[in-house]
Amino acid sequence: MKVIFFGTPQFAVPSLERLLNHPEVELLGVVTQPDKRRGRGNQLTPSPVKAIALAQQLPVWQPKRVKKSAETLTQLREAEADVFVVVAYGQILSPEILDMPKLGCINVHGSILPKYRGAAPIQWCLYHGETETGITTMLMDAGMDTGAMLLKAYTPINLLDNAQQLAQMLSELGADLLVETLLKLGRQETQPIAQDDSQATYASLIQKADYCLDWSRSAIELHNQVRGFFPNCVASFQDKALKVIATVPLGSAYFSQLPSELDVLKQQWSSLVQMSGRPGEVVSIVKGVGPIIQTGDGLLLLQEVQLAGKRAQQAWDFANGMRLTVGEVLSNGQV
Image (tube, rainbow, N blue to C red):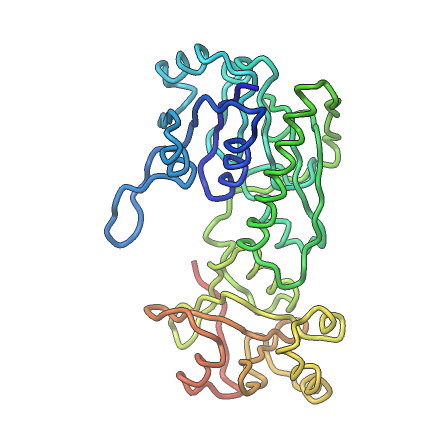
């Protein structure tokens, strides 16, 4: 099967690597986003997908806008690929491109469609507290993730999984499902199934305001926000921005899902549950673990934070270094 691969970030790398190593797949080339300036040196840096492609001496196309690049369009058409595979490419493909390959364009999407169509399905499914997600492969059409579905694979979401960890799991799951999809498609063993648009939800691009923590929300809502938009959620401490990188919601409903190093919280729960304060207030500091914050509903343990201008650190080290005291109040995050 002759394939051209469209992809850009790390999420797409396992899929590309599976295709490179599969005896029934011939990779004709890779289409990826233009190099971007990154890091302190502001150096032009290739995408993770481009780095793999160059190492394998594959042709690479990097049009700024693929549907407007006459040169790229001509080369894609002349390649006569059986399939275009699209994994987190980052540009919308025109109907002209979608119609080029003989078997169509196959997309690997990071949710169980029709839920969480759009740019950030992993982040928003965590934000909404889903306990299961997965991968859908689909035949692309001109809409935003509206194409007919081919195969699905499911995975549970654990209470402490963050967006980075879940993306890693889903990227591997997606790579396996992609290979299965291509093989079944080539043998005509899969039947596309139309999506039920009435069940669709949309995972929009994340805005800066989405990162701002509001302590009047519940502990579980704040926890889901922190892990969904990892590592960028922010509160305020002594008029400085405080990134909140990892948290744990506290309560009997969650203790069975916590690692053994947090058993001390279970042991102290009968006294912790008696504590209360206003939203954002430090109600306890557990030695070796970290500060516990009162929210609009329930208590939230801070596990990892980063004060503006400082390195990320364990919240217990932060509490020690800043001489944090019970009764101090964290303010809401600001855009």
